[in-house]
Length: 268
Image (cartoon, rainbow, N blue to C red; front, side, top):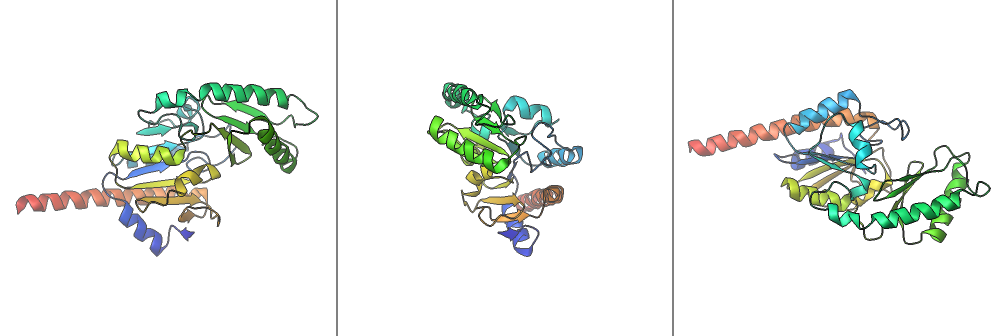
C-alpha cells in the first residue's frame, strides 16, 4: 500500500479527478469517527466539505447500515445513498433485493433462538435485522476472542449458506448471490455517467470495492493494512478532512480547466 499524500498518490488523484468523477465513501470509521455503532454521526465540518464537493461532482455513501438508519445520521442528502452493503439504494435494483428479505428473517429467527442459550453465548451479543442483511454485534461481549470463535461455529452450523463479512466487533451476514459494495459502485458509476471514481473505506466490508482493481477507480483505505487490496491509504480517520479538501481543490481545478479549454475551442 502507498501513502495517499505522496508524490505517487497525488499523481493518481490528478489522473482520476476530472469533471464528473464519482466520489464515494464508507460511513462508519471513514466519514464518521468510530465511536460505537449506536453513537455514530457525521461531524459538521465533514458534512460541510461533502456538500461543497457535491456542488461540483456526484457524491455517494455506501454503508452496511440500513437506509432508515443512515439517513438520520447525515444531515444532508448525497446524490447516492447505498445501504446494506450494496443491496439497498442502488438505482433500479430495489426489486432485486426484496427476494432476500425472507432469507434474512429466517436467519434472524434461527440465530435468535440459538443465542438465547446464555450458557453457550455471551449476553452482550446483539442481532440487528436490517431487512436485506443481518448484523451480529458483539462489542459488549466479555471475551472477544471466545465470542468470535463461538459465533463463527454457530454460523457454519446454523446458517451455512450465509456470506459472512467480519467487521469491527460485528459479523455481517449477506444472502448468497446478493450484490456487494463493489457491484454497487460500478452501478453508481453507470448511473452518474462517471468515467472515474474515488472510493474510501476502512473495513473488510470495503474489500469488495478494493478488489475491483480497476484503473478508473482510486481505492483508499483508512489506516495501512498490508493484506488489503486498496492501493493507497490514509494514516488515520482524521485525514479524511484533508482528503476532502484536496478533492474539492482538484475537482474545482479540473472543471475550470475543462471550461477554459471549451471556450478556447469555440474561439478557434
